[in-house]
Length: 451
Image (cartoon, rainbow, N blue to C red; front, side):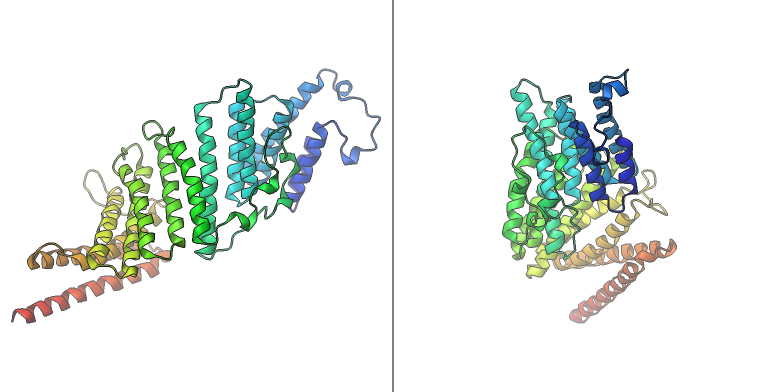
């Protein structure tokens, strides 16, 4: 039966339907019913007689393990949907047999829900999470002990579904992107995920397809307000001391929820306030990690903060705010861009490498161009709070710094033949030349006033 199911899945041109049918057959086999093509073979001897050295229970156990291994195989083959199907069948059979480790079963069910959330099957994801919670409630009431990390993972999995729903809502309704819904409505719910004996709502209780997304600010805010408490609960376990990677990942997710909500906000002042919430979450982490041990995380935090303050600067400029406030946000953005870029410099000489590794190069170039723009925008607040001499000196130093950095970045693109960045490099050169011209005109104006 397993070989037939695997062959059916491998040969299928439409993976959802074929794999689902194969596993439906597997469920029927588990119940002791004949497969459709074997319906006429009612006179077949019992399984124990066909396999005299194996009892039925052992064979069923091995069959469940085979489904589990198939889930792993398809995962390594990057056939994620088929892997998920076999994982679901494994969970079903484990639960039906009563032979499972509570922590492992719950974690696997949460991971399955996480996969479905990534392909926008939010109804399936939330059903999996509800099933995991129901198993926990039932088994702990019967005396089972749940690991502390599993309890935190339940909170985190729930929070991340709301985060993904909000991010998908932003993609569709703010950015205007089309989303591929693998399971657009409840009719796609696979029968082998109907876990028996659990106190969980029916599949149509959960949101499916576009119903799971927020089309306006009020609905987006509801997703954030629902998901954020789960993130905070997970953070009470995944603290920075001992859980660095998990802690930073959760804080990044929380920041992303505010970012997406800000996209739905029409009032620039309120949108800026949401971005400031992001900064409050992230700033305690900047410089808190050992860059030798966590170089990637340290860079991610500083780059995210640079983006946060850049968006605040953008919003304030759009709002028509005071030049000093626009420049202050730009200065904060420039500070974090510089921290990010300096992390690539040699610890011995302080010089930038001739070439940044390919994985980091896109982020490096994006930060380099962003830094030049933020330095340019800081001109509006040059010398605020100081005398005219300070203003002139600060203005000139900012222009020179921006000019040099934009020129260096443009030359980097040319030197390495990065065709995908040619347009960005050309814009940087034009901005650099504009800065020099503005400084020249300002000097002429100052000289004429002096005379």
